[in-house]
Image (spheres, rainbow, N blue to C red):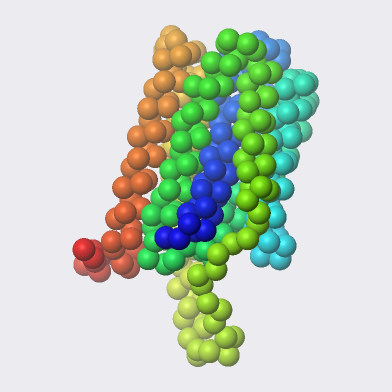
Length: 287
């Protein structure tokens, strides 16, 4: 992989780390926020729900926007918007502002996957795609794992405002790095003429539609299985099992970092195998 492609992968992975760091900012501080903001866990759950609903609703429209206006440009806007919301919370940590900030942060979060995957697909060679995706995902898990340790330490050592400011600062730092390196993307893929292989289009669309449906179900089940652990395990361990806040966050970080290294191993396997969507005896590994 060339230096330019490594630089692109580093940019995209850094942005993905920020996105997961931002996703975990409120869940990591969950045990501390009721007292600071004078609200209940139900209120906080509503705010997290607003974030996730906003992110889900804008995914498809932002995918079209990425194709129309450019992935790197949208990625920079997402970083700016997400960071700005936590900067506002650092100045004014109140429930009303939290709900507004979570709605806007959800919109910002909707940018990352369509923009990042578009950049990876365009700039990374096909035979290195598995490892590139695994590094990208690893960075996201790393951001999720680091957030509880860093943010809780800042909140308990200084205050919650400092934790929100750190979350905003990390995003702004990566945004500045992206601006400094520029928005050029090395191109590896070739454009296929529209007139070519018209007879194969219905079959391709059918296969693609089935694959997308399967992947939607897969990611839905994955989110259900891991989302509760990521977002609510710390609060549950502290409130219901009398585990200390530091120990609960350490356990969550261990879970997430272990998952991250599992993803790296999966990327290597993906590059050494073919027919990833097949079943039974069609699984083939190359050496």
